[in-house]
Image (cartoon, rainbow, N blue to C red; front, side, top):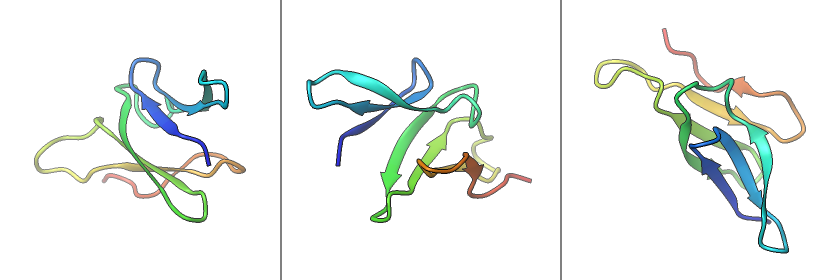
Length: 79
């Protein structure tokens, strides 16, 4: 696989290309207007992201799930 990087400045998930450049893999602006900051990729290719758009402490942490072949969805909802 290729290296994936969360770019907080542009609020995107970027992919490193074979020539060393980066290209946008996914737009993360729908997850949080404050940007995302951590990433985990499951063996099946699902990409889990978290963001800083939550109340700390005392509130649940909203997490996002990005499936490359499907639309973005929230893995859990804050309530």
